[in-house]
Image 1 (cartoon, rainbow, N blue to C red):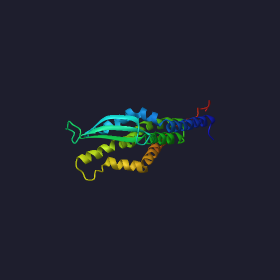
Image 2 (spheres, rainbow, N blue to C red; image 1 turned 30 degrees about the horizontal axis):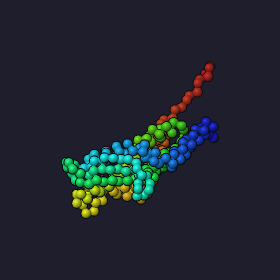
Image 3 (cartoon, rainbow, N blue to C red; image 1 turned 180 degrees about the vertical axis):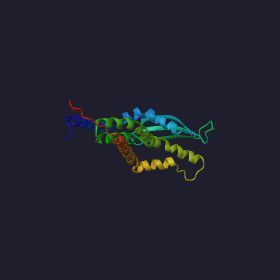
Image 4 (cartoon, rainbow, N blue to C red; image 1 turned 120 degrees about the vertical axis):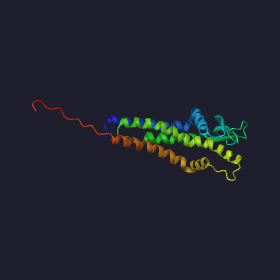
Length: 211
């Protein structure tokens, strides 16, 4: 039977999961604006070896859809050595898609039961870098994939379908949710394995006087 102290701790983590879900559902724009510097950095890293120049990543109101989007603006050159750009590319991701990754990942991670309190903290420590990589593989790729398509068109390819485009289609076809769930469960599995692989310590009873 679980102790009242352990039950209280589990209820605190449950409340944290519910809070993450509610905050994510109601503060999508705020999260997108807060994460914009990270998305800008990810886009520039992905564009480092390509003839793309990321000029802007901001959150704006989209006049066409009437919603709010994360918008990336980039100049695309034919070759990296060219001084003048050949195209101006603007890509957009709805903030509803942006907020999906943190909502699914953190809610599932916080709701998953833990054997002991220390396991929770190990999960959080491992989850932070995993989540950063997950954001790059989802929102980061969706922002950058139109640049690869434009580069392929400028190179004269008849069917400009790049690996970034294929990955983006996979995300849009349900792969994003599958990736988010897999990442969260992967963190849970890794920390559970590390916890179970630690050698158990046994405490020897103190010798009684006269024995």
